[in-house]
Every structure is written in structure tokens, then in C-alpha cells.
Image 1 (cartoon, one colour):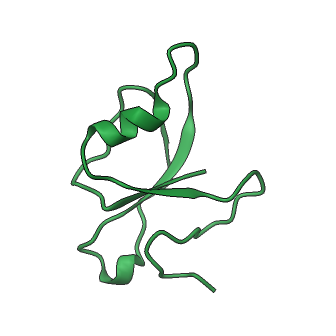
Image 2: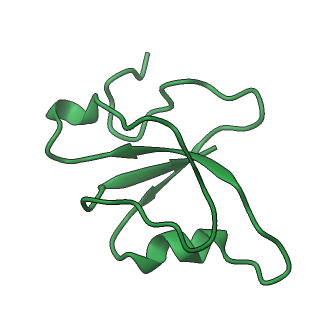
Length: 79
């Protein structure tokens, strides 16, 4: 299984496979959320490179336009 692998799907979603996006700038989150006709609500888990083998993930959060993810995460999983 992929448990403990950076960018893995820890809790498989019945909707679709998660998309893992490397976070390189704060605007990366806005780029995947912003559609000027729609507000997206997404479920995310965040991987930090300080965590051993990226095995620890943040609590699931619901994010919308304008929200930020703290502490420079390495990966963002979008479900």
C-alpha cells in the first residue's frame, strides 16, 4: 500500500483519485481554486517535508478562495 508515501492518498475518496500538487508559491493554492464564476470547496491533506517520510498529515481542512495553508507545506492533496 501507499501509506506513509509522500503524496499518497491516506483516506481513499469514492469520488476520484486525489491530485497531488507540489506547493512552490503561496499562489499555487489560488491557481487551483480560482474560477471567477464558481467557489470551490476542497478537502485537503498537507504534507510537510520536516515529517519523516511525509507519513504525518494535517487534519483534513475545507478550503475556499482566499484561505491559506501555513508553514510551507511540500504537497497538497486535492480530493
